[in-house]
Image (tube, rainbow, N blue to C red; front, side):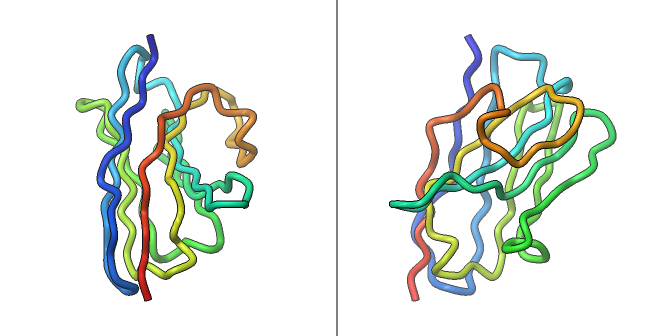
Length: 124
């Protein structure tokens, strides 16, 4: 019943920008922490960013801090990831996720629901 659908991926040049969106349904969106992970071929899934359900606090991986911004619109049941100054190493499938844990966790196994992912490719 729970569905997370990512969109906005594509191919861009290094230094460019993309905005990813994740539309959620089947859950009480405002009660879930929302997050983004990414996974490149041959690598483990990696935490990117998260935003709390209550106070709106945000968390970022060191590799994207200062370049990416996560936000949410509870009225639209949508979470966004604005990605600027993109680098080739940002190339990956990006996944939207949701969880209800009290403390934010960067381990993928903790998160309850996942989208199917959207491909982001950065060319040099």
